[in-house]
Image 1 (cartoon, rainbow, N blue to C red):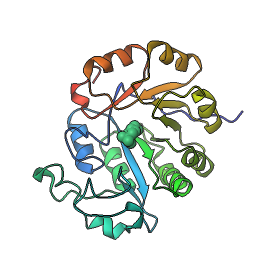
Image 2 (image 1 turned 90 degrees about the vertical axis):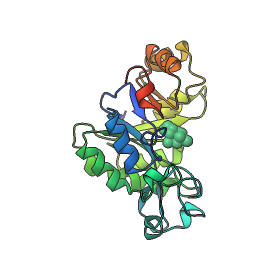
Image 3 (image 1 turned 90 degrees about the horizontal axis):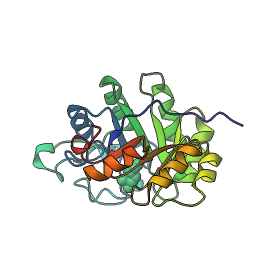
Image 4 (image 1 turned 135 degrees about the vertical axis):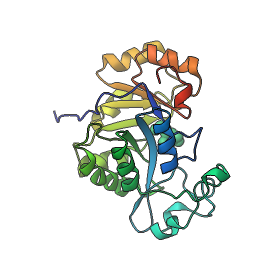
Length: 247
Ligand code: G3P
Ligand code: MG
């Protein structure tokens, strides 16, 4: 059996796309806000540009989170660089740029923070995005809080594993599929990240008993967060890290 790489011990609270409730998502300003709130782990989304660079973006277009228009897969890094990724959220963040993965990792290393790097491929680019993200993260693995990857795409996770097997992997799902353990095992994932809604005390126990670690998203209700943590969820991903119990 191949060894399954594990992330380090995680904090109970992880910032979603930085600290999405407080600052524009997937920006360095968002990471800085998470840091200011005392959050040591953040999740963010990574895609490939048309010319093969890795940048932080959630959607398949730039329409919602920048002042630009059009599909993300068609833009080069220099086209991304020209976009404003902060003003849509608030004029206070005008001038904020779409960061590269490297810039985000450098910021987090400087602030002693850890990264849950979600591989979020544009359609059709699942394998190349997974491989590129994993290769890029290799050089960030020696710090006190080495990063890990997560993805809804099993193609991306398999490609990440092939490119850099030592980077820990997490399997994201929108529900709680009956075959989750087999799928995690097949991908060499140490962590399972279902949406929080289907999680019950019993299901959380079944994940622990199967030898996997449980993370969940996106929880913005303090009482729900408290229940999930009490059932053994290791880390809850939230837009409001400061409002959650366990922060
Ligand atoms: O990684 C947890 C969460 O970010 C997954 O959903 O759509 O917010 O990327 P989404
Ligand atoms: Mg995400």
